[in-house]
Image 1 (spheres, one colour):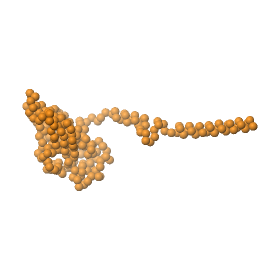
Image 2 (cartoon, helix red, strand yellow):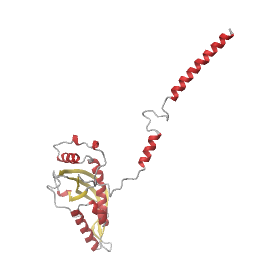
Image 3 (tube, helix red, strand yellow):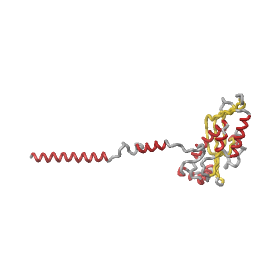
Length: 253
């Protein structure tokens, strides 16, 4: 009988051992890191993301209207062919798959702020790559006239209230997009003695501008240039094409 009890004890121990092995196998077989499908990235994924975030930005003159997004981000297939703006944007996207209207607007806003700041500061060198040659010539002429008169310009965009694409076209390989900018600005010009000669540094001015940017879609340079400026207050309805129905170009001063 004693042997019977020993065999019974062995069976009990064996059953416990099998249970522990099965239990241990289940535990070791799970994914480590306490990560279920909905618990976010793993440690290695976070590390990779951190390293990517620390990469230096691309060396560009300024992120002018241009696209870095893949063609899949474009929604040209959903464009309304009856809408001339959407049709124009679809044409541009067809010729340049990297073009994206949202990225374009983001870049155009930065360009708008940068160009106005550079113009107020009389910085011709930084303006040159951002402007078409004829536009740069007009800006440079106004800057030099201001300098020769001993005047100093004070300019600041207090708020950009609205930005919208109002015209887009593709003529040959040249893409053109016109944006209406509505902003509150402080604009003032002082003479050499500090006397106010134009504007008011203590008063906001509502400014509505039409800026047309252009770019050759076959160019390797992703940056766009400012091709024309006009006052939106002089235009009752935007033209279907930037080259049609536009008022005389606005003097940068």
